[in-house]
Every structure is written in structure tokens, then in C-alpha cells.
Image (cartoon, rainbow, N blue to C red):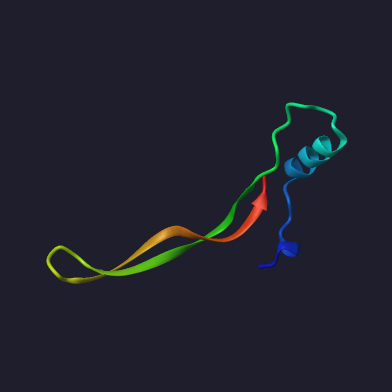
Length: 67
């Protein structure tokens, strides 16, 4: 997913406008947050030397958006 295809939230757009116009000094900076996540699979030996395949959900960030 490209940066051009991700829509900023209305909150982030207004927050950015307020900051750029200098209307309020206490408006926090925009920040990048995860937008979509994907699982990560891990193959390892456990304490009994068994091979284990485990999937951990939502461990890899696939795309970001502004908040």
C-alpha cells in the first residue's frame, strides 16, 4: 500500500491545519501510528527440543497513517 492511497483522518487534517496556521500553541504534533498489522510466524525449538511453529498476530506493521 503506498502513502498516496492512505487517507488521513479528519482529526489529523484539522490538527495539521491548526498547527500550520499557529492558531493554538497546545495542539500536539501529528504522529505516525500503525494502520494495518500482519502476523509473524516463528519456528523454534522448545525446551524439550521439539520443533514449534507459532504465529503471533498483529506483530508486523504493514502501513501507517497520521493521528
